[in-house]
Length: 97
Ligand SMILES: [Zn+2]
Image 1 (cartoon, helix red, strand yellow):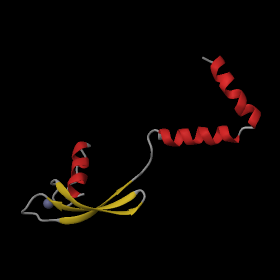
Image 2 (image 1 turned 45 degrees about the vertical axis):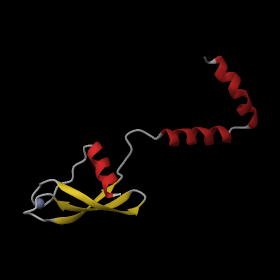
Image 3 (image 1 turned 180 degrees about the horizontal axis):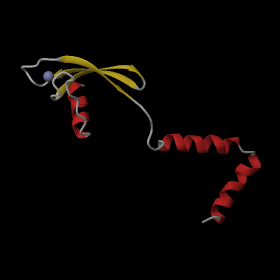
Image 4 (image 1 turned 60 degrees about the vertical axis):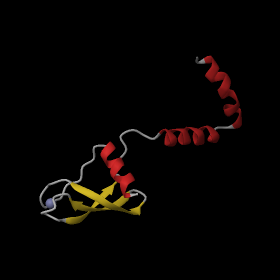
């Protein structure tokens, strides 16, 4: 788990640094505290520093919506249409091509 997390961090070029000496730190453990927030238990890589600390990683906002969300929204909207309108959609879509 730790190796996987560090690999993910490495692949995304995410860096954690010690707030004390501003040197790179290693994430030793991730503790999920909610769906969108985790505590990261970190230790400074500078052996002379030895600082260990907890940082928080949390979701802030989307830059573009998930396709899953968009598809679900469209599906729910189409389901809410009267049956006759739902039935007419394939023909309307075919005409619009
Ligand atoms: Zn340090």
